[in-house]
Length: 359
Image 1: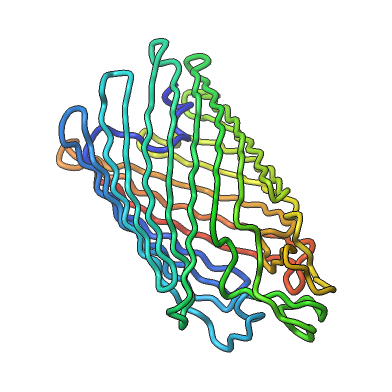
Image 2: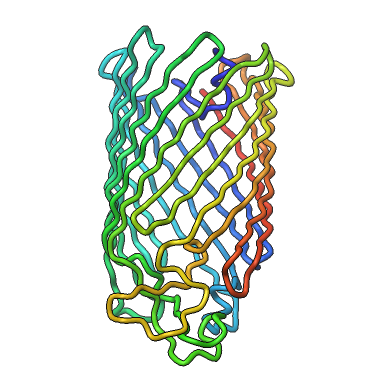
């Protein structure tokens, strides 16, 4: 049972201090650096608080920037602060609440969430329900008069069942309703022309997408301990929305306890999606008032493969009173765009280094 769960997220009842840094670079000339720090403190036997600060610092001269006629790479920083409180009402029921605030020079976001986890059947079954409400304000750099609102309501319901001492399964359903400005204030669509931004276009119009979006996702995962030192898991997720965009994701992973305090995990992810119903690589005629246009590659047909390796090792400190865990993760991704003018593929390298001190 313990090994089957080793591929899940780390859960501990002890106080923790954690820090990590994520680095990403890709062939579309984009570099991201994301430092993160977290403090997890038990206030009592039944209550704990978790506070996290994270930042995303990215520099890019990607195709989106190049097609907007920008001559120089753009550098941006997003700062985020998360605070969460969880309380065990009983040995079977835990309630959580959280607040998230993030800000960058042209975007601000507030998020609230509440949730609960209920275990029953001698802790062999667990039901989790989470509700989120997010209020965003979208701006445009250099234009203080530009301000648009975006709201999101979503819920996630999951059921986890221990099938036997070495195996568990989980089913998840997610529903989200998004209302407001969902375009990019920097993205323009050429009518006529080459399809490469507004090059040789008869007209150059701001991106125009629907104001509402309803998203659904269904996921199923199974994890099993294959031996005392090896476990494996597979996860499938199907996504669809009312923009007629559908996707499939498959994640396979294997974990190996190479030593008593060391874990090696290998992961492979495959993702594929179709296009939104209003997406076109080239728009040849002037759209009507209710016709939507986009130059968003995330709404075009695409697929990607990702493979990664994670190595985690624990160290006992002060005679075992404290425990330090270090993790190194290295991953590579390859994105394929089958119907997007100016970009056919992106190769990306990702590295994450993390330390967690358990006290």
